[in-house]
Image 1 (spheres, helix red, strand yellow):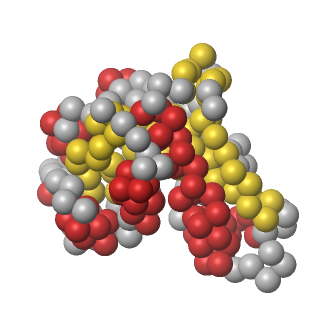
Image 2: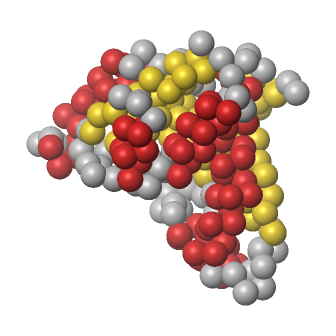
Length: 208
């Protein structure tokens, strides 16, 4: 049974997609053992409580410096003894110690088709605003392993979403979540939980 720790910062819609997928059998051989939030009082924590999942808050404001915060974050992860760490809208740059310790055991969902609209500063609505400014006809989402860089780890899977002529950043964000993020994140977790994902250098091999 794959032990999953999910890291969140806000509403937790991707967390909910994972919870629902475990409940209805789209994700097998896995359980969410802890939800870690860097912000108190967010909707994601309510979702965890409703699902009976233990949660913990590690807020930067509670620590004197970044180093102390990073140590607390690593401890919160370690305590869960996870086989997989899922970043579900987690707006924190992970300390390198954590990415090294859990190499190829941390995954993230990013709301674009990497390498487009990714990297430092590209998160949330900013991604969709830039996609619309550029006039792209297709966008989407990417699930990738997390390394020491920003959105630079090996790609597990991607799903394309069409951009509509009347899209706003908000409407595009919702469509990307509904048609891509909430689908490929649970799918990737299920594949990992069932031993169907292997990393070979910069490339990921996925068995159907």
